[in-house]
Length: 371
Length: 98
Image (cartoon, rainbow over all chains, first blue to last red; front, side, top):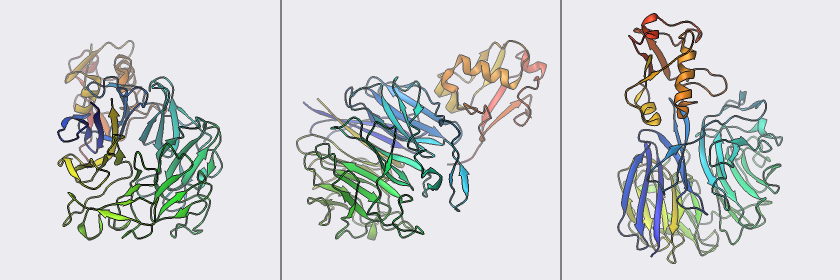
């Protein structure tokens, strides 16, 4: 029988939630790395017991942990993230030049074919890669040096590279996104990069349709449609049908198009999910109602999903890396909140239940569907 | 034998108890102690001082014989009480944050 393993990163450690395919009874293990911020935990698609975790602290910096037994035991691996060459400057919040400084790893994306190869998105924004299971990390400097880096500027959460999507049909193609620079694509395995932000409009920018500077919060893709991407921007939900060459807004009837998380149903490439958040000034759901919105048409037409979710006095946030889906026949949708809940729907969003309610604030959620 | 007391999180990371003991060749300085500590426990590399600049991380302090030596040159020889192991070298995390 299939099993599901949920990997949860929180402000005070990592948690591993295990269940069988019914997804009714859950075993919770953790905290792993208690007291440390865990921005992300993710498993290798080709070796699901190989997990990588980003553990960090304002006191002690960055640590990368690796498990080879599905999260039961962990070993620290390499944590030396050094920019190639002289990293130069980007823009600070006030528009002045600011030196590039490594702060933490936001996102770890294991290779689709090799368990020892992992991409790391870091703050200040850059892309690193290991090919030896995390022992050593090297920057793919073509991204940071492609020409617009000196004009990138941090979002409120820092200047982070938070999204990495590997194209399953083309090993040379990778999409990434940076707050607040925008989305980028490489078609040569990371040597050279192209900004893919045409069609985005960000009113806070002096030039709202500029090539870079957009605060992209998250990208999502269905593996069967690798040229179709969905984006939750700071404001606006967007889609592209041409690998990012141009974007169209699909916010439609959402109550607010601000938010962080976005994901795609495992078996329906045009069924997508967002969690609308009231505004960039008020990081909680509108009206105190926690609602996931689902579109079965790839955007524009959205329906609220509320069964099992709190519909009064709920003021949590759902961060950009805190939504994931499993690949069981009845697709499961999962998301974590700043209030420490991890909610799960075993029926594609129709009904929800909390797996756990009292974890530290949740930063990231990933799901592994195990044979 | 040099004695080093680590903060809670670094003890867990290095999988050691409250105090570790190290051999240091040559003059006993802050740099020599940290070099020996990182050589013995490589997982601590980068958590006390920056990988490249070797500067102390801002929220950590070093204490010897009840004196804060964090701002001293890491090349300054430390007191005999540290070199003899009579007193430990303390690495202390700032009490800050939530």
